[in-house]
Length: 210
Image 1 (cartoon, one colour):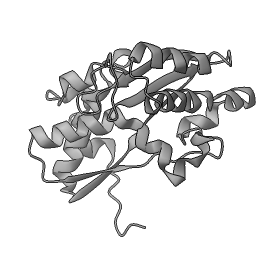
Image 2 (tube, rainbow, N blue to C red; image 1 turned 60 degrees about the horizontal axis):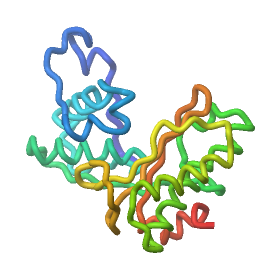
Image 3 (cartoon, rainbow, N blue to C red; image 1 turned 180 degrees about the vertical axis):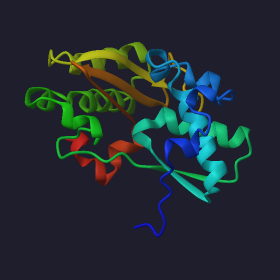
Image 4 (cartoon, rainbow, N blue to C red; image 1 turned 120 degrees about the vertical axis):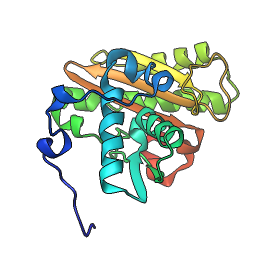
């Protein structure tokens, strides 16, 4: 539970309106890949408002979900580079019983789309299992993931990537630290997910390991 809730109005955060904001915070390199390719201004806006919230509220600890792992990595870089005195905690991804990562967007899926949506998690798991089994070529890992995605025709793949978790740079050869990312669009609903080898062993992720 919570003892206090800080829920500012728009006027409190932006006294001159959003158009009056002349300063923004960006973490350029981490923001340019994956989600940043299709949403080029999103992370600068996110960093700016998070920095404002940190300055106003002065939290000791801030919690960010790993489902938006790129966002977490960007905020970690911002906290480090700008010397915010806040501890960041990454919260594990919560999943439905069929492995689909929990998200507010899931309610917008049709029944058919909802039935197909767990294919993204299954694809990432297939890639991670192949890596654990000794395959390190990212081209072949991506092909393995695409083979799983191709078992259904409703989702349109936007990207499947294997990256360094610290830099988010795409890799050509994966190792035990590598992280798998994917984005699939079901009509107007865009779903993202990610995992690494350690996620295959979490009891809370049993659904994606079946």
